[in-house]
Length: 329
Image 1: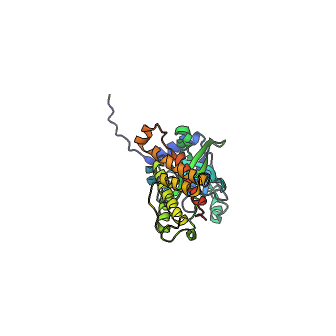
Image 2: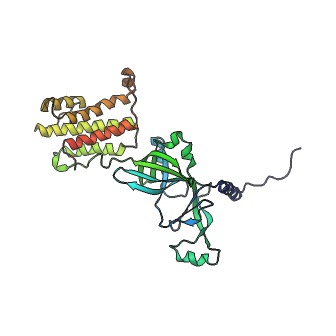
Image 3: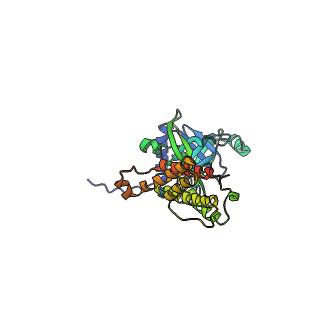
């Protein structure tokens, strides 16, 4: 028999309370961020314990394709993913830290936490409230979403920060540690140290703007565009570099505009077969990678499609060319 009892309206707060209770019962690690003070709280039964000193917390966005760069948030809304710094080695550009995802559909929620040792007013309030105070926190738990990705997300990119200021990182390893947290090892996706800053004193005044513009396009595309696009920009920049360098070497009045393959042969003729071999090899690498991104050429010659690692190789080859012609600083 059909029921004619009125249906109870959906109560988001009641649903969220039940959701929290179920998840907390599962014993997940929890992270809380106080939007008023920027302080961080952690705990297994809830984000109740203040973390001191306060670690750096960044918004995190998983990048599975160039379009995902548009999803990087413009401000901190308490949603999405969050990354807590653990360590960073500037030499290897490797960073380690824990990755969290949003807990429930509410951006900010009242949470009873232990008094923070850095806030005197918390200590006074907690004295009359069982040692705890109420805070408005954005609550997170370990990023199980990443664990569901293929290879636990290893090989994908992670953007840290906001739209107006973010960095790109490659996920090298994903681990589940004893606390249940998801620990990721990242490597910086940056041309810093790869593409040297140009030494303007080594370049003709009329050649500098064109060379700099070509390199700027490389830097702007690196790790952000498809591999073929990165290789295309590297090849264009290589042509600009070697043509303007050969103009200087041969004391020509104007640069000659020709293909990269022709410039490789020109360097061989200028210096001899046994000289400038490394320079020619770096240029040849960039030149050989270029057709692999063209479907017709790839099919015609049974070439392997280029990937992110090939694009990175092209970047390093271009950086080598800059250093080899002594135009970097």
